Length: 249
Image (cartoon, rainbow, N blue to C red; front, side):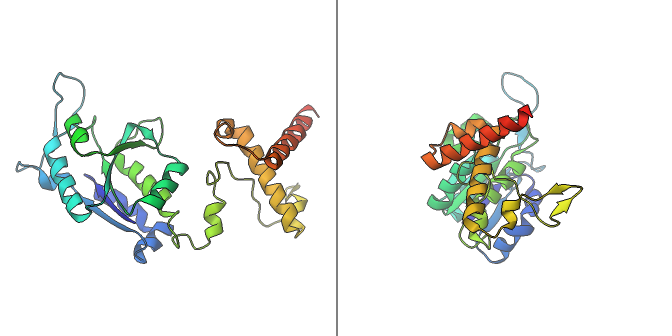
């Protein structure tokens, strides 16, 4: 997978040089390049922002420098889809990350700044707008690094143990079950006995039950988006019954 970021602050993407994405970059399982639209500004100060027509606060990124940067990116990556990180975009989630990891080999990510981007650039060059959440951040760079990290994890061999990916939160549409490690007892709090049993089938069932339960407790909206099997529904019902019993005792 090849990523190209159009950004005023390429150094922000250095965060991806660490951990899993760092190893993936070293092993060339993913590739990341950055293009700065200032290099395509037609003034000696490399200014790329102007006040919006019609008034309003702040400045807008100009269409010409962004267009120049995008054409350069497309020259490097002719098959790439152009994605603009924007609070107006569709929600980037695990399902979209999986779709992109399977269907695309090149992506150009446009990181906006200031009050926004001249709409003509979006109309001319952008294939899709994505948002990582309903909140405001200072620019698209951090959102772009989130997107790159999430997609990269789904590319074969990027994560050493493939089970780590398939058991990730959201991979199957559910939150992850509670997890424990040594010591077995800490300040009278014990690890659930089943996890010490060595019975893999019982552990698997406990994990699924508590994954369903965690989703029901913390993100019930996710359950509306998936169809549970009879076994999953029975496990969830058992979790709910046990939870309500504990609440009343």
